[in-house]
Length: 101
Image 1 (cartoon, one colour):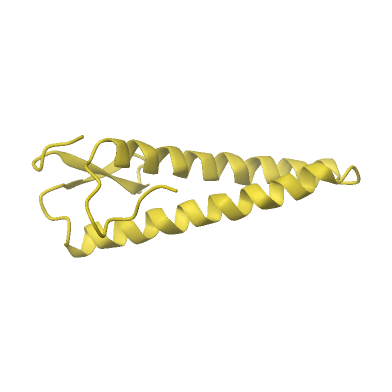
Image 2: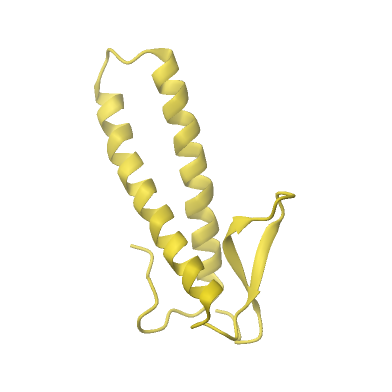
């Protein structure tokens, strides 16, 4: 849990690839709400990608190129989900705030 004056890890990186942070004091601000929506979107994409991956892995006819693309997409989704988990693990869940399902 974070105190109200700690920084929130945002679900995106800067142009230089470094993490972006936001003061946790303003949970209702524009950037905080945008981050909440992006986190929810990233979790939704990861869930859909997992369903797709399970279908692909059940199909013995998939070629190496398809599997390579799937692995790259899964790695990207996993990176996003881990960032969301890290961010949410460091700040309190409050009513009306998206929860990681």
